[in-house]
Length: 619
Ligand SMILES: Nc1ncnc2c1ncn2[C@@H]1O[C@H](COP(=O)(O)OP(=O)(O)OP(=O)(O)O)[C@@H](O)[C@H]1O
Image 1 (cartoon, rainbow, N blue to C red):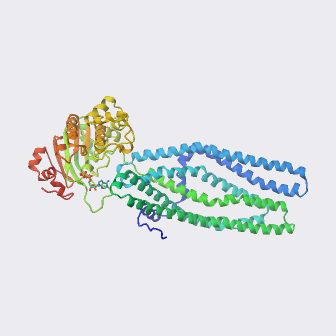
Image 2 (cartoon, rainbow, N blue to C red; image 1 turned 90 degrees about the horizontal axis):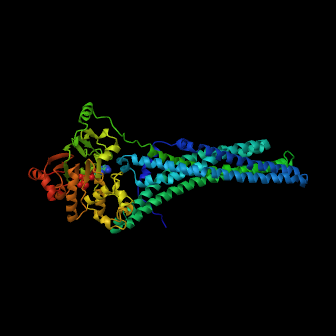
Image 3 (cartoon, rainbow, N blue to C red; image 1 turned 45 degrees about the vertical axis):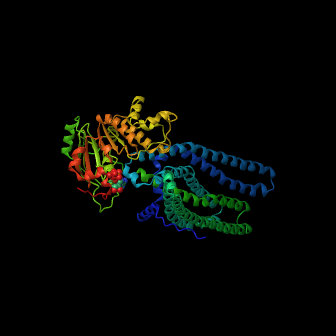
């Protein structure tokens, strides 16, 4: 059977190209970045390493005692002299077991706490990063960083780190012991050290690339799984589950190929790491036997020497997986800090110019409404040869006024509304709320002032109450019920536990119109000073839409609102209408005025605009 050859070009491979172009990373330097976190468990790490070193000492003491037994009681047939030495061997075994237990138990709890702290930092960072960051990163990539990578880092601190230290100490101590026993045999046993050193350096270079690729591919695979679960209805409805399964298979095949490459590299290293010392040990045994036969070495010393050399097999053989694990952990650390190092947008920017500062200062406390002045915007990932999406928006929404925003599909209406709560930063120009530049307001305060209901209503796995009160955490039941009434969300009363009903993952158990009404209730519950509604009634039937409109009119009477509208019924909620075309506000006026003065507006309202290509205008 021929293996499928996936044609999928993954983000992981692209990133890998980038990684190799920027040079080989240092495992040690990457791991050292864990220092601030490891500092919290420094004491327990020290105890754990000390326990492991003492356990190792007791292991190395065994051959010495064995040598004594062979050269002493056994050679002299002195049974009485044997018992104390046998008792000492038993004691050494017990001490080793106790120290082994101490090493494990002392680290378990603090490391679990450390993992929780790291995951907490990552989550908090993800919350602070701007929407543009989340546009760029696949959710599976972030998910794998918060789960698999965290686990890898914790495990590294628990075992490989401890053993890298302990095994190095054990190797050095064992080498000293072997030299004291017989320097000639010690030199023979140590002969493979130089080739092993060169080989492990090479291995590290190859393995770190493969390990990075595998972890990134894991993230991409998580994205495919997540998308296919979230989009299961669409996939089933269009009978696309097979093609999704094919995508999953191709992605997991890529991961499998990378994992096999890692296993292959590790197997090669292992073969040499195990093989070379075995050959050296065989040589030492032959030379040792020759020396004993020629009375140049006692049999006891040879037994002690060989036992010491055998005790050192584990530290040497474990080198392969310790290096592999250190590499995985370094990759996980790189991936973790890639997110943590992402620059966060400054909370409060300086006023754009001294003039703005003065205007802001004098305008504080006024009721100027919302003002866009020369606002420009382009998405960071937009192709270079495309013009700005918004190229000089000038719009004034008076205090207490409701302004409808209309425009052809893709003209940038949603994007313009997203600038108000600073989900994206305008690339030029200023936006003011009651005369105050939004960049001067702390984001938290800005988002208290500006409430938003998106076209695609997102609900969280929580109760109706929790979902709605996200819009005003301190609000009480009266406000909750009033907001539900405004949004005509009477269906909530019929839910099994009323407002305390869990609405399931992303509110999937509710209909589109029901979700939209809860999202609307969330937007109005805090009685916000400024309201942004992105086509808030699109999923409602005509009857419910009329009821919501009537109730909304009351809410909109006391706030300054920008409402993205596609239908005349939504436009009629507004005092005035702004027409967005070619990245500018083409016309502003009442519905009636625009029907007379703007052919483009007439087309948009009559539905003819649907026939007009995106981005173009017909006047
Ligand atoms: N995150 C993004 N990154 C890059 N381009 C984007 C992003 N979001 C939207 N766009 C592009 O910006 C343009 C305007 O999108 P926007 O959603 O603002 O239009 P709209 O007027 O609200 O459309 P509609 O009426 O269909 O909702 C579209 O061409 C879209 O492809």
